[in-house]
Length: 136
Image (tube, rainbow, N blue to C red):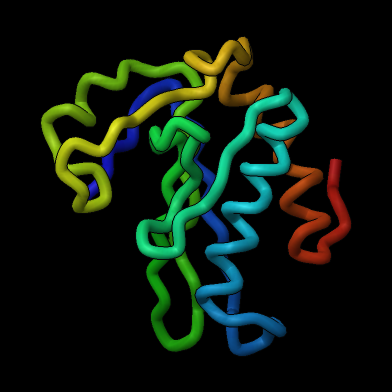
């Protein structure tokens, strides 16, 4: 289970995986890498976790979730990044099925940015990662 709310950036990636040169695991890794690289630009160290997809700070707090649905070779859903939000709803659930999982957000890492500004910064990274030409 996860939570989506104001102050979170939600990125839905719609892919026909049969036409791509990668599978679901590679898609998850690429989405995680985009966020990790983006945070690295701010001097923040982060990593993925093969057993629990998403992006985590060096201290182990989850910052971004990857949740995909694949049906008939097509991928729906995608990525959510906690930018500047009320994190208390996460205390009432087991985020991504993990009881007590610490959750954080970009603002708490010292990055002052809005979800729209974050989206503008992530778009070129996503386009490059998936081989698309960035549009204006």
